[in-house]
Amino acid sequence: MTDLISGLTRLRQWAEHNPLPDDEPGGIDDLTEEMQHFSVHRAEATHLLLEE
Image (cartoon, rainbow, N blue to C red; front, side, top):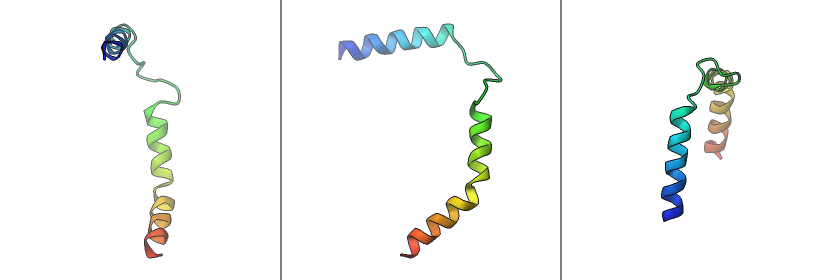
């Protein structure tokens, strides 16, 4: 348990000093766009799986 607490403490300290950039290449905006792009295909695949 002590290892977990010390690791979490180090991670929090690192995160405080290393904020994510607003325009990180390949960041969340790209992921969101990709998810939206494939939403119709995912819906169709889910529909086919649930029919069987």
